[in-house]
Amino acid sequence: MKTTTIAAILSAALFALSPSAATAETGSGGVVNEFADGSVTREEGLTNWQTYYEVASHPRCSNCHVGASNQPMWTGPSYGASLGKARPHGMNVNAGESRIGVETLMCSTCHTTLSGPDPDANAEPHAAPRVAGAWQLAPVEAEWFGKSSSYVCNQLRDPERNGDRSIREVAEHLDHDVILHWAWNPGGGREPAPHSLQMAMDALMKWAAAGTPCPAE
Image (tube, rainbow, N blue to C red; front, side, top):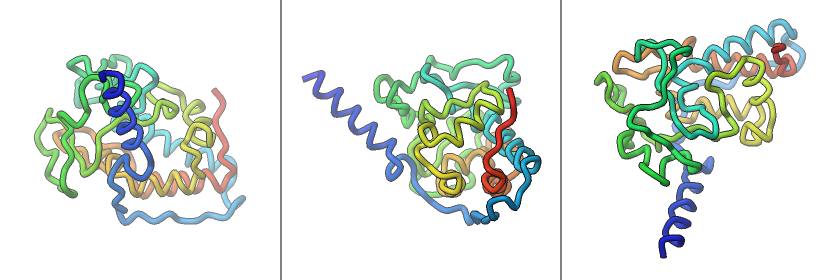
């Protein structure tokens, strides 16, 4: 009976991580601007990649883009610590292979799901952030925390590690995933991700037009 119950829970978790059910999809009003292939030079492409990497490597994003440890991180100015003084999420939180915590404690226990967008929902300092979608870690293949620009670049352009998405689909994902929107409006005195959602989307599309060049290690 116990094995059957665990299997059912894990099955539900896998469904929750599917593109159609992982988080509410609500377009932010961002525009996926098209840039013709070859219209952006390699040098410009690398510059635009760096713009995106500044977003991807920021604590608002990378703290939940962790590897097989399944432990979200607490880093950044909000915690009075730099990346070099990183510490795992408090209370020994581990999201498990499900990436939403079904094996131990569901992320949604504290990161409760809002019924709809609420710009003031996360105004309280130190309270668990909430969005109108299921709070969860990114897939383990998208490990960004502490990773170099070259590593993240190669991961993001690899369909086997980016959810089998084109770069345009990655840009569309930024516009529709409400957890990602939170990064630029985290509230509670947290430092937001740099640039803007639209700048991040444009940077990705210009990088793609340049042929997705990656910096050397």
